Amino acid sequence: MLHATGPLLTVDVGTGETHESDVDHVLERFVGGRGVGTRLAHERIPFDADPFGAENRLVFATGPLQSSRTSFTGRLSCTGLSPLTGGLCSSNAGGFLSRNFGATGYSAVELVGASDELVAVHVRDDGVRVEPVPDLRGALTSEVTDHVEERHGQGAEHVACVGPAGENRVRFAAVMTSESRAFGRGGLGAVLGAKNVKLLTFDGDSTPDVDVGGEVSEDDESGEAVADAVHRGAATSDSVMRRQGTAGLTTYADEVGALPTRYFSELAFEGAADVGGDAVEAKKYRKGTCSQCAFACKLPTRDEERGVETEGPEFETVMAFGSNAGVDDVVDVMHANDLCDEFGMDTISCGDTVSAYLASEGAFGDVDLVTDLVGKIARREGVGDLLAEGVDRAHGRLDVENWTAKGMEFAAHDGRTLNGQALAFATSNRGADHLYGSMYVYEYPLVGPDDALDPTGFAGKAERLVETENRNAVLDSAICCRFSRDVVGEDRLAALLDTDVDSLQAVGARVVDLERHFNNRRGFDRRDDALPYDLPGFEAALDEYYEKRGWDDDGTVPRSRVE
Image 1: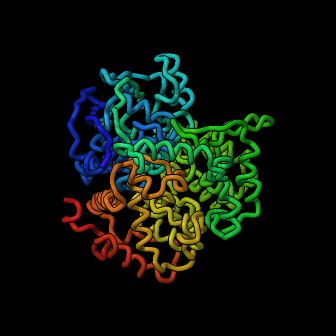
Image 2 (image 1 turned 90 degrees about the horizontal axis):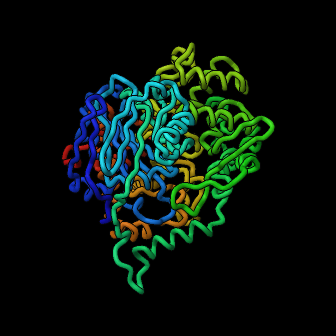
Image 3 (image 1 turned 60 degrees about the vertical axis):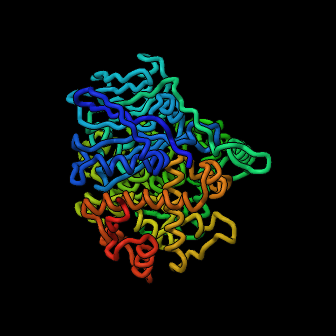
């Protein structure tokens, strides 16, 4: 099977010492990206580690597809112990960083230790330099990238950094790259901040030579022929996602009653059309994309009258800062999106947490308060210090319901309507994240009738969820964007990786097993596979899910599955 190549680089940010390790045995079994990050974290992070402690590690990892010209592959993975959930978390970001990371020649770069002063870590194929950057204390994302441009002559596509939120250990702080792309979920930006690392840069001329999919034959669509087909498919797709990104789902989710509104108290929003796909598209002023991708689904948006410019919002941000906050002006949502990018925060967790505060104050729709709270959270000022802890830790003092799973705030695609997605939220090792299991795709549905599922109930959904979680784990290891769904089916993905579908499922299962086992060792079990609402048949579906995975009834992984 095709996999990433190159050594692991370990950087102790406290001492400045570096070390290279041969990790071919990991690459061969786990492909790259999330899989490799998970295996390395499982081996190297103590099960009792403090997420903010020096013993936590942050692993950036590339996949084999980042060495190709295939569309949907402008992504990089980051893995570490989450300060939001207390479990293992992988997140990946788009933009233009991945190719520059690959040019260093490393398959993975891990940070360990903690610095006594604020530093930048510069990784090149000819060496590593740790540079004190005290003048960047409190700098916004754009200010960091301006600094790198001025000091080192490198653009935002070489930079991964944190804003004030990461420095202040906001539990849902993001690592930002290309200014507006985020390693968003799980608070990995707070891990970087706890290590006193403001930024990393990646560069070099050592991109590995990877033969995507093996040899190309005249009668077999494999190898680079598949890569070309994927690129052509992306370029010719007429998907609404190309014009509106995921924001195009807003009105549809509202119509079927799956759009969280006013801190999850309702399932439809009267202002959905005013913040949804058409409203976002009306503010789009040019095309945007990620490295090597012809799909060009990104959303550079601008409002001239109010002077607001950002990238997005995507659907999850529309939900979190729009419907869930009771805000019905797309420019207000754009503004919140931009603030989160500049401060370096996950828009889903931040928006949901702000919405929880609005619920506690009876202040839905107060956009001035929303703006004020985002800044206070990032700086941990006043009530922002409480809200920076996230809903799970703050809900009691706010006297609101705890709308989280495993401590992570919920994404959209409400499970009370889409019951398979509810199961996916509950079982996800990452927490209440929609992309871990992606069952909403089958329940809206966003697929053809042969693959669609009735959104009500759990019949047949445990088996489908296992298959989808496994495939998503491989996509995150290869690494390939979720938007590739209509162009990169399982057979094409297998051809790109020079293998077969069964082997892909086996790799995905290994990744999910390792994540679950790590979390089990930290005390997670069936009690954490829970939801803030009741659904008939849920416990039976959970039993079926564990059986399909080969796990024990209490939600733990037998040791034999991770040896």
